[in-house]
Image (cartoon, protein in one colour):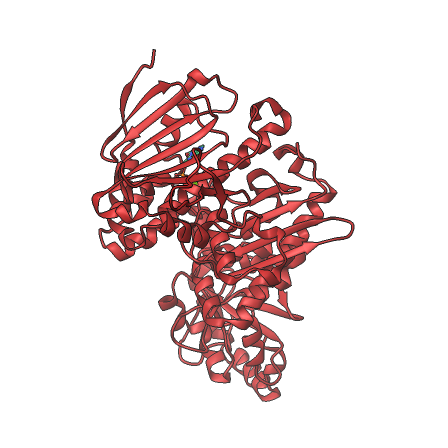
Length: 561
Ligand code: ADP
Ligand code: MG
């Protein structure tokens, strides 16, 4: 009846376990944050499901997490009365990794502890971090709504396999028992655990309880539980009362991340619409930033009740790296993903949250340029999708872009359009740029000769997405962009009357030569002209004003068009 079976972990889990145990050695206590975070998620899910099925709460509607230790047995227990897991769910969730791209991610790992621990941080540590401190983990769980006889006991030593059997579990929810390794016994110290809970889990919006300590002979027969965290959801508290450390811890819980965020923005909106948002800029790109089905979006709460993870409708795709929470008073608790697709409430929240995110990035760029430079390295490519996707915010997004330019030889993308405009020479009213495959290829391009001569800066765009981006970015601060490789380069007021006269004379002079070259090249070229954009090179290929750029041609050719 209990049907005990032994199953192997998915290969990826085995690799992750190995890695985790070895590379997170210096920060072991995070396992508690992960397990409490899971217990809190499980309670959120139950609360949500119970909205439509109140029976799921059984007679136990006060959700809480209890942490206890048994120094004699060398165990640490985390018990929740959340949604719980069925046997199948325990096998699926605690035996495999469902994230797409996991294999690719694991192949990037090098064996170098420091690098790997960073990478693991991008991946998210999760449940398996229990094995950093435990040499055996027992999970006892019953899913809300299932009978007491359909509990599950999952057990593993974190090596290659785990056991599952069906058990009786009258109380709904999940109890996780860690058998602490010999050298990790200090995690059986209640006082130390309280410290860790305060540090990592104070912001969790439900009570985390530990047994009240009793001294002398007056110990009561039953355990008295006492709440050790603050137990109010962080975003509901006033900004002035929240410390940076608390904001950072909350981020790690909400974003399932392991590293600190770069910036955050916490706002309460009142009036026609009422909602609170807490948005974060992560410190690093997740390993699956470019996977189509990678998780994105905000955690959605309605009147403090968790409704769903990854609500994608509140931010445009080019801001998919932004993490955080939005808690609405206007949406209905039984809102579905379909309902979220559009509607005036969603549209107006989306546009406000988009603006907040862009403001937060602007502020980061202004206040901490070095931090912003780091942000740009991680997410700049994604932000470049913005002008095409979000017409209304084009100018604002453009202000956040960073480019390499002829201003310095480094090839670093560190020039903003405002910097560029600040360095324009007298008479210049255009923003000049050149696209190409690599910095090495464009930096000595003959197209730049005339600009170098006149001391005009040119932006050098060599990311795959750049040509496409420039198709949508036509002006900034009233100045239009000009591709220096295209058509007849008109330098306007930058050319003196003498320049122009000299050009006309040269053109007349060389008419015969031009005809001969035209004859020789025939249909391979659209036109042959005398150019004034060169100072050293004899000839140059230019792209017609209306033609596709080279990068776009290559992309289309590669895709067989
Ligand atoms: P994540 O929290 O990022 O999903 P974890 O490795 O932390 O990843 O957890 C894996 C999954 O195991 C969870 O998504 C959840 O389905 C399940 N799980 C873990 N702990 C609990 C719990 N206390 N109650 C119910 N389900 C849980
Ligand atoms: Mg988790």
